[in-house]
Length: 415
Image (cartoon, rainbow, N blue to C red; front, side, top):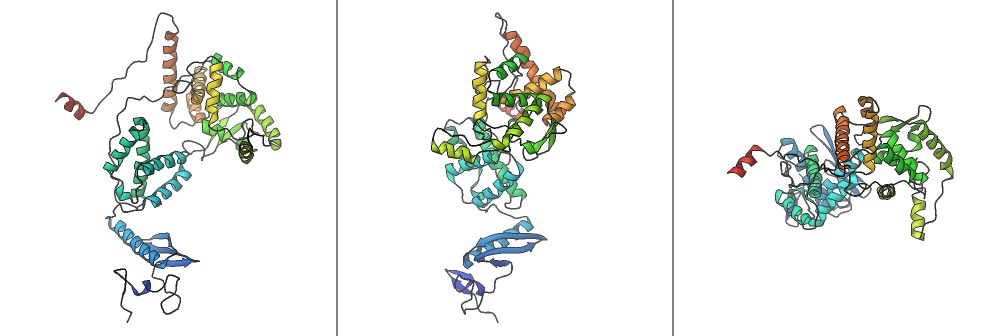
């Protein structure tokens, strides 16, 4: 006969949950762990199978706490198997698992982490069951009162919605209560970019320092995305075949691709590789800056700053400053010319020069040819409008696109 259950803090525990917390029974013998529990060092772990799936999880260093967590974990897996899983899952655990996945699958995990951090600033939940329609409505109001644009708020809510969807997919919770929740309405248009002319490109190159000139030239001759160029390393260059290999973890669509490199850029890259072993830290304005630059020194990246550190956020600021000196007025925050406009220019000028659109699509890494042609069409439409605006007696404003609304909403307006 087994001993009767022991009552601890008003809750009946099995006989193996009594005694001290150190992994020994009340009689001093090594504690017999319940099925599905393992101990490694001072830590208790859950390890069991449910419907053929191995369940493993770190529990606690405290035996009683580990026992409670194991019981809860078994109950949750039983509910999941029966299709009656609830949303009572720890927020911190969900956030950590989602960000771990995001770091492996996306290039913008930091943006996800920032967005989820904003929800914690508003009202940090302890459990996913606290994530409700009302919770999100309150968050949106809180962000709008901080003068954050509706478009930005929508993006942050999308991150939370994606987390909830993943938790459903991974069998952590039963349902996503945010599914189908309407976005905040706004009249902000997606940013439009135009293609630069050959004269404007030459002006940018002429007004740039040597270490930036080669960066702009690489953008213009390869159509690379900003992050792809920043993360480009000498090991990504095939010097015999004159191509750069965009790694999957860097590419936006997570597919590796090869980008041809022109002769001029190959000579530049060869020279940079030859000089890379002698790159050394540059003294900064303060000891702290000097230490930071020394820690970020890179001999692997193809393109670096004057301090021999990888190019980072200041690249766009420098681009705007150079464009201003080059007389390109719409190169500014919210304007139609930024670093990504160099990619648009590559597509536009290459197609106008007779390049095969399908080849352009493969070089720049678009998923479809239609997407490539859409970039070209938009750039040409804007260029034509700019040509009309160059006349001293005419203005060609962007046409208003008629907003299409659901028929039900139209009926409600007419009622």
